[in-house]
Amino acid sequence: MTEPTEPTTDDPNTTAADRTPPSVAIVDAKTPGNVGTIARAMKNFGFEDLLLVDPPELDPDGEAYGFAGQAREDILPNATELSFDELAESYHTIGCTAVTNEDDRSHMRYPYSTPADLAERLPTIEAPTALVFGRERVGLTNEELARIDEICAIPASEDYPVLNLGQAATVTLYELRTLTLPADGTQLPDLERTRAPEPTLDRLYDQWGALLEELNHPDEKRDKTMRMLRRVFGRADLTEREANTLLGVLRRATERPAED
Image (cartoon, rainbow, N blue to C red):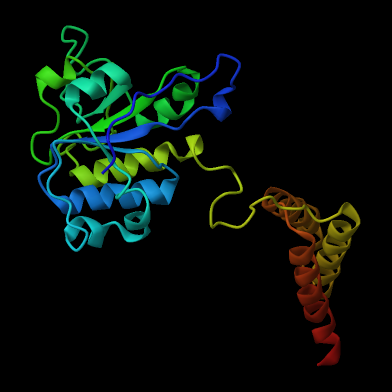
C-alpha cells in the first residue's frame, strides 16, 4: 500500500469533466474479501483511487486479491492507507449508510442524497471527494458520521433496507459510473439507431395494404388497421434493415395465396 498524499484541488479553470473522480474509502473492514469485492466494483465502473482506514491484512495470496479480479493488478496494490482524521481533513466526504427514518429533527443521518442524486451534483464540487463505506455489521459510527460532510443512502425496501458492504459499494459505484466512464467507454454497443428512410417505410405500408387486400380484410376496417400499423411501426423506429426484412416477409406472404 502507498503512503497517504495530500490531494490537490483542481485548477479553477478546469471543467467538471476534467476533475478527478471520487476516491473510494473503506473504514475498518473486517474481512479482506469485502475489500477485494469493492476494488473489483471500482474496476468495473472506472474508479481508481482506493483509500483504506484500519484495513485487515491484505495478503496477495489471500481472499482480497482472490475477490478483486483484474483490480488485483492496480487498484488493490496501489491502495492508500490513512487514518480517519486524514480522510476527514483532506477530502469532501460522502458517508454511505442505510436510511434510518430520521428527519430534519436529527442531523446525524439526515438530510441524505441517493447515488443518482450524487451523479448529477458531484461534478459541481471543486474539491477532492471520497465515498466512505463503513464496517460490515455496523457501518459508520455516529461519531464518524458527525465528521462526514454529507450522507448518501440507497433506496431500498422499508422492511429491510440494509445492504452488505460489497452490495452497497457496487450499487453506488454503478450509479456514479457517469463520472468515470465516457458514453462510448463500456462494453455495450452503440445504441444510436438510424431510422429507416421514409420511402422504405412507405413501401412497407403499401405492402401491408396489399396483404390486407389479398386476405380480403374487410374494406370498412382497412383504414383503421393501416392507421394502427403506422402508429405501431412509428413508435418502433425501425432501422432500414428491420424495415427491409419485414418488407420481404410481407411480399412472400402476399404472393403465397396466388401460388396455391
